[in-house]
Image (cartoon, rainbow, N blue to C red; front, side, top):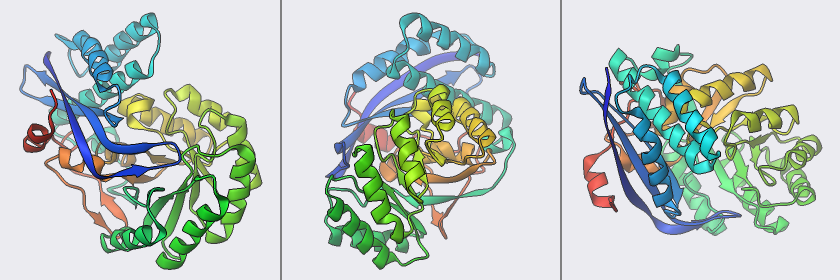
Length: 361
């Protein structure tokens, strides 16, 4: 089998309303869609994204540049292809754009390999489970009022979720605590509740907030301080009883190792686009396992399911609905879980009508 063609398209997926976190204001996600074609008619698909389509052209140019390496190569030799790409990245200087492009290529190559083997990837890798816990992450934004998040929380419960994540980190301790207090009261003690600070606080403020929130039994407190502040993460983790989740902004396994060595988080949250695709996400999961730390995948719900199904220490996937309309196949949440698809490859294919409607160029 040989790679014969690379195709990329840029689309923009608008949100119904502008949403905010402690550090973001978002009205859409721009995506570069990648399709790798082979001489046997098998295609691999994947995508990367940028909030508000920020620098999406740069992402595409980087992806197209690195993808040119693939023409004529056997997609089943993934390690060799990745080594060739890494050599180019090392020579040109590592950048987040380049790693994101490599991640996207890696995922599409694995999609081809699963389809060529007529196996879903979690079966190809060696499955550990056929379904995985999930939590609702596409709401409860910092820009919403308390009444709004309470209404949305009920919608999540009606959809089958048994866990959800609220955004905090406003800088107003009383306001953040009140949001969590009212949400916990509304959903009851049995529903898992996470809170994401989105790097919005300094260490001492994060500790104060974390202590105030302990009575509301959070499943985790996410990114309480800047992602690169290993010491700050470690201090917060040491001072509060709530588990700390982080690492979604790490662009290498080395950053994750530094977090683990610093004893700075209780749950590792690798992001498929940033960490290096399916290959590196699985490697990071195994590294975290050596430290007896679980992982929970970040965004990329559909294409992370194969990792969730094939690594022992994955406890959940983040359910982010932003990209669901990209795919022909849809996820269903049943009793707080998602079934790992038994379709070949990643199990998801681009919906041509959605792409046509949202394409920019």
